[in-house]
Amino acid sequence: MKTRATQKNRIILIRNGHQFIHTNIKLIQAAKKFILLHTYIFTEDEVTTPIINALSEAADRGVQVYILLDAFGSSDFPAQTVEKLKAHGVKFSFFTPLINLKKIGRRLHQKMLIIDNKIALTGGINLSQEFNNKYKPWLDFSCCIEGEEVHHLYQQSLQLYLSHFPLSKTELLGFNELKHLANDNVLVKTNVNDFFKNNQDIFTSYIKAISTARDEIIILATYFIPGKLMLNELKKAANRGVEIKLIFGKVSDQPLASIAEKYLYEWYIKNNIQIYEWGDSIIHGKLALIDSKWVTIGSYNHNYISRYGNLELNLEVFNKSFAKIVKNEFDMILSRSKKIQLDEFEFSTKSRLLSFLVYKLTNLITFLSIILLFRKSSESTDKLLK
Image 1 (spheres, helix red, strand yellow):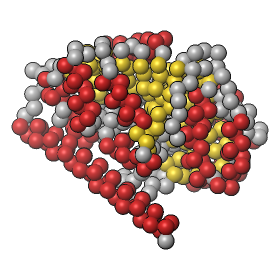
Image 2 (cartoon, rainbow, N blue to C red):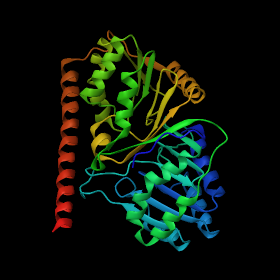
Image 3 (cartoon, one colour):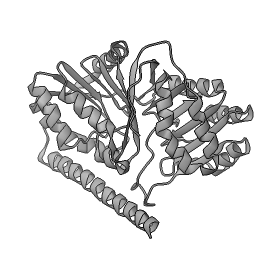
Image 4 (cartoon, rainbow, N blue to C red):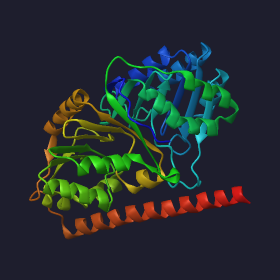
């Protein structure tokens, strides 16, 4: 569903690691009516066990708790823990990809915790010790939002929960009556990418913001393999004199994606787009700032899987005070990152060929995945019509 931006909100930038885990626990413990939690990766480990316990305790005190996990991303979530949660009254389900082939399928890539339609936590961070290691957490971000936009987050999530918890329809719809206004005035809009429902709000918001940029564009990204339209808009912005900085990780949890990213380095630099590599930890963040007034944060990666395959969610924030906080964060990251110069980045013929092949192969695999998704979707539709 399409939503408009709302004003009566308060928003806080949350960094990966202890801050993120502690915020989850604190919000769950404060819940009075209901909790909706859906995410891509949820593992049971030393870091997340306190969250699992808090969810069980919330159900014990009468809070209606719903958990929806992606069937592939959270395939390691223990069956015995699912049963324990259900024993406490937690309603639990898996989002199943449309096709059941490993690493191919439509995925629930959103990360969302909604509490009483009052406060929510959303962004790019998964619930796993791997991402939130207390010694060296991955560089990633979420935001804690309080106010009227939380009701829009609930509305955007509602169909997911109705589909997976049909017996709880009356209860889920009843949460719609709960609304809350924050004292602050931060303009926020919920954007969703769900290609099967003809919704590409996140991608469209990026293109619009880049095409109207006047001063500066900063994008922190992982698995950054954008299509021609976005590349063209970045080039046009650079030609207008906009300073563009792209921040990637020196190392990646997906080495092939990192090789594919580097295929475009030379093109970026020759088109006056600055490249920075963060070497302190793995980058998993999806955060952008334009002209010190526009911010987007969420689960969306700049590749065809996020654009056409996954269910993604970003918050678009129009607020100079919040943008300043994000700018300060970017300044710190840039100060600790290495700027890649063209004379330092000379591909050997072998490396250039490898990067080219991986880049093309990545897009080919994505293309084939999307075709399979559409075929499966069409087959399901035909069955319904017969």
